[in-house]
Length: 216
Image (cartoon, rainbow, N blue to C red):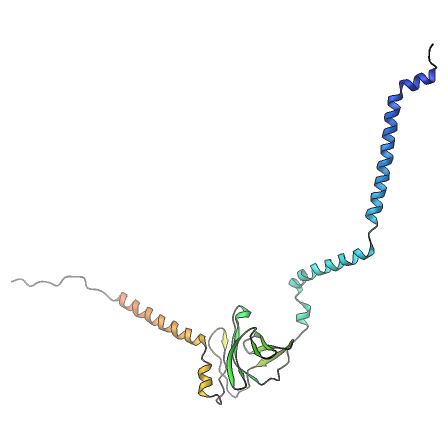
């Protein structure tokens, strides 16, 4: 007995209809997943934006400081003069600021201090310039300049400026002020003198001819 026309058509196209239904179901599922993903990415907590902005500012400040400089350091301005009983006797400026030093008279004792050294309780040497030094006193910067004298002399050395020492200093203090730089300069002068003497000996002509013998 032959089947009706409608069930026969359905039986014939059943695989095609089943595949089409699966494709439609997969598209619907993919669409819902896409919608959920978009909602998840757009739902950013408000509190998380502020740390991101703060971190962006922190990473940008060092880069801008290289171009425009440190605003906090620039706003400090010149340091006021110190009221401590200190006298600047000599400054030695090094290309490396941390290696610079200065001779400072603290009360009745003169000593050479390097940058970062403690001069007295709560007072350290912060920086050294040709005509003055800066002190760090309990977290505040103070300047110490050379004493004003009627006559001053400028040292001919490249990286040092030493004004005349006051006449009131004792011989023991003057002997203490003799720095290592002067000792090195004297040693270099001795080495140079020895080299010049050696070069003079080498340049003297040497007579290699044998003396003529008298014929008998």
